[in-house]
Image 1 (cartoon, rainbow over the protein chains, first blue to last red):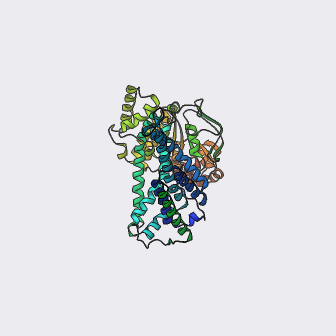
Image 2 (cartoon, rainbow over the protein chains, first blue to last red; image 1 turned 90 degrees about the horizontal axis):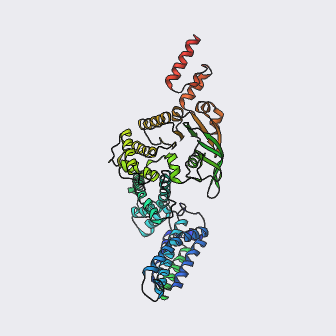
Image 3 (cartoon, rainbow over the protein chains, first blue to last red; image 1 turned 45 degrees about the vertical axis):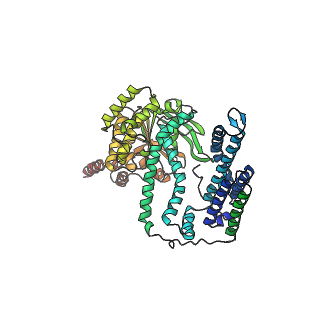
Length: 249
Length: 275
């Protein structure tokens, strides 16, 4: 799980695409998902997400992320199905509208989360930050914050697994099947995770300042991020997705 | 006490980190696990602690198979002090921190017993119970983590690079306490350590690992005299052993020296004998 956001090198069209185009594509998929309530369109968008993985040469990773998200989706689906009371009752307290809303919510979650995770696996975080600064004129501090937050996710996951290991050594039984008990065991672990996160963030900020972080401007990066045919294709697909979702609601 | 029988361990993806590991450690021994990074030392201590289950062979502590023993049962017998105390500390006061492990091992109902043991340890280590562990220095936090590890009186103490990041005084304080524990209470100590001076000062036996295999097992002094073995394991003996070893040819017996004062005394004695 810690290699979730590890960049997979390659020369696929998705690798060659300008990072800004990738972000636009990701946003377009998300906007399209929120414009429509049509389950078929949402299913199409989900298939499109998986296609992004295939085009980027990260098919296995795409399905592994999809599998991970499915677990959360099942939980979310049950909650939605139980709490939406509109529509005709099918069984117990579950209604037809509840099931449809639950399906739409879950599909939307999958459609929105997948491309973001996939884009991160085919793009270096530094390229995302630099292109946002160069192309969109975003202040470097914001771009750096964004990419650092993403880069820290696997590190925090590793830290959490180390903390759980340390607590297991002290006799804490995390393998209990009682969900409430497990939650009670996990809550105290937020303290060391928070402390280590704050320390790590502080150390990163100091290291960045020591290397002239505040002197960085738009011209500082040596790499230029141009737009090519593949980017044009990306923008067209983005526009088509939004238009399609707006038309077939 | 601790027996490894042809133990092997492979992480997911079949990356084998430990192979055919066999050794026996008696009660009350002080053993150092030596080897370069990636030699499999940490995997070996995690296998002893039962944090990892052998994919081959069998690991037993006090006759109990670590792969089949419950976590709380294992924690009663085996204490594990990690390199980073911040992964271990999770309570807001030193008192609660010490009691945390006790509650997990003894059960929450043992309130009185837990309070008595916590008071006893606070007195022994000189901590204030209401102190925030995260406001302490790195060495003090490591000491809090050690206190908490020792609270359930484990028969085996596993140390994974316990002195990393500590200054000399903090390091000595912790290691002296562990030595006393080993000598007076007979606690078996297994320590992963990259500092050969500490190994020479405190451990009596060493297991040398390289590439997941056990290269040698013997008394620390003999291990440090075996230059080809040390080279194979990418280890450098402590400076005092290197100096003594060089003098050894001229002053036979001087390579037994463990401290600078004993080396000087030994050398002076030999010189006197020659004169």
